[in-house]
Image (cartoon, rainbow, N blue to C red; front, side, top):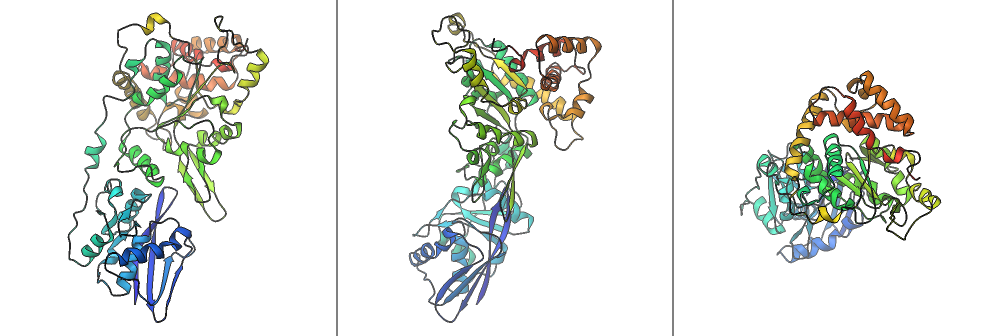
Length: 511
């Protein structure tokens, strides 16, 4: 007897439907074909124990299972339930007339219980696209899959629940989630709030500009100046995610198996990898490609603390994703692309000792040591960071003040208003949503300067020895400052403020 059961494989952030064909014949043997990996090949032991512990048996016949398309590599233990149900139906131990209307996925325990799987959301999206009626999956993954409307999503605890439902003996209620209601549960009381930050008004202003235009930013200052504290608060002032952004972000975290029991993500991700991270862990990849930290930070913030401590080759592999906002991983037989549109926030000490030009510190570094330390960060990487800001320690008088600073919620209102102006400006452009994404052509169109502003920028570039790469960055940041003020044109005051935020471009900054 031949039976077809349907599962799904995830490549990149997209799913592909897998047809599992189970054939029973005379003889004895268990043959699994269709490029399964070791985890799938081992499934026969888990399936045999699970069936026996639930009152069924592994048939003493020749079992041939094909996972089509046969030239596509299948991986992971999520096909256990698919194979087990196929074997039960093919051996006539259960009767399931509507089995072809469902996607079935789950890893089996030896007692028949189900363990969570990866990529439940992309699988559910694909199942709906292809017209399947429902989707059986472990209870732990049900919230993320139930985001997809128009598909019956059944969270199950064990194999017996699936068997009873298919035979019409038991009932399962599909999980229903109101996606919009879930999405709009925004947190107006973030865990890290700018109201906790004493002093640092100029740095807060800088963070507001970076958030409003989606600009990459680097914070330079001695230990204890508050660089990490400020960076952790940046997500609290970013505009709320759109529904499309939330779905994209949830998809990536679903593929990486990081959602646990959460449904739709409505908070922007904040990723802070340690400086010992490898290339593959940062950008993604591996023999079975998985998204890296830059994709996990998609639509959120990637924070690299102590930037010069990262291996130079690790930082260099970020250059292309920073520009293209996606990362493509190529292998001999397939290519996957992960989105990676994130805000880069980096922090660093100005010198190896951490104390630069500090008369109170006995630890000083020679200009040569400082030059070598700073040269760990390449020019092309700095070229992709729009804002450089020096962070100075907060004096005691400011630290001991009782007065609360402006809250993140108030700052976010201004940031959101500026982003709305940008959304309207770039509405006709597919891949541009905010100022940091502008290319040279857009800068010439939207950052037109009057004669006074041109002269100011020319003087600044000559006097401060600003590099050519700083020119476009200054114009982008000035455009964002104008948007925060709802000003239609960039004027000299906007240019003057933007010039302050290019510390590392000044020749003699080390002097």
